[in-house]
Amino acid sequence: MVLIGAGLAKEMIYTGKHIDAQTALSYGLVNKVVPAEELLDAAKALMADILKVSPVAIKYAKLSINKGADMDLMNGLEVEKDLVGLCFATEDKEVGMHAFLEKQKPVFR
Image (cartoon, rainbow, N blue to C red):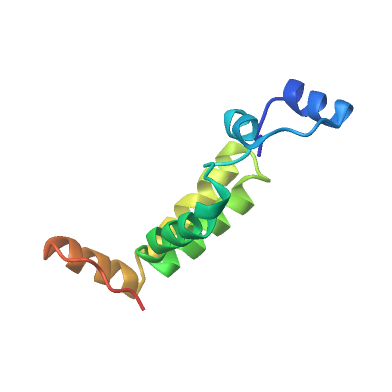
């Protein structure tokens, strides 16, 4: 998985210079920058968003990303396809589909 290009990576490694949060954001090394006093609230808000999603889907998405990063594209897509198939065979899929059709929020176990 490539986070930044080789040129930026080499510059950071060769020079050992520290970068500030805004630079890390512009390089794509972090997703968001918040003031220190807002950090815990921002982390809790992100976790609240993640907890709204099926835990099974999160588990398989994480597995797909982590395994797929070490594979060529075709094998990575095959792993992703298999894991999506597993998601569709879970109770969480039923809960999510029912909630969607009823225009309600799903409650996953």
